[in-house]
Image 1 (cartoon, helix red, strand yellow):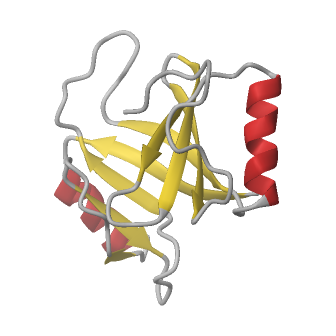
Image 2: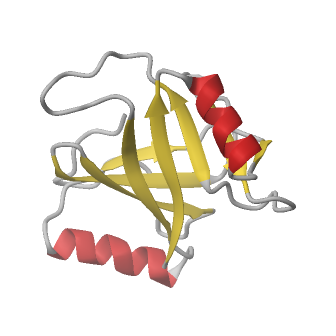
Length: 143
């Protein structure tokens, strides 16, 4: 398992994009057609995995649980096949609820686990073998 990306929710989408591109040196690259505006930023010369996902803060923060801008979640990429199945088995064995989402226009699936208010962990895989077709028993509905 490896760290996949960090998502930042910001009311200043363009300014944040400029900072990460102009100062940090990331490249603005391809992003699936989500319903919320944003950018995926990649390491120079790498079009494989975006390091930073920027999301427009279109919904006002609900104090005290959320503060915008904020780091929304941390994500881990899991290899499809046995590693993915093992993750699903661990979640089930520990009775950890999760939400399932599919990335638009791709063959990727995401699992979101809310550890505490404002603390979310995502697991993502591509072309998963044994991935849930929908919500697993005991898991909340997908978003």
